[in-house]
Length: 172
Image (cartoon, rainbow, N blue to C red; front, side, top):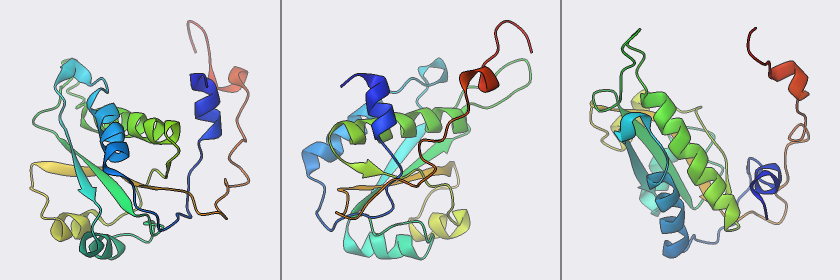
């Protein structure tokens, strides 16, 4: 399957089966994150794997968007380790974490796993529940697992603006 076919096929899964994700598949997804480009190759991200029953119970207290996935990946970023653009000091932490998350999301789809990108979580609760150090900011949560038989894309999943409404050449 070519990349655009994979990107079109993947959708935000909100209904997972109870089947556990095999370690080799989890490592495949994590490796995709490791391979993601980051500003200055500083790799300011850390991934917390939330997979045992107790950790998943704690996650439910931090977000309603856990979707009972058998595993979730919490991508955190370090502002101090991320690159700062010298012109305005824009920090790359969120962008770097987003690239890592997107790459893991697509790698999961490549091997038959579903994911949903979640930003709707209580950062204070999640920080406390998982003992996240102050040096790291929780940026993205990626519930992941096998799709339940009734899983389906949101009806708006394929709605896309035409390129001429989102792309310009040379100047706005």
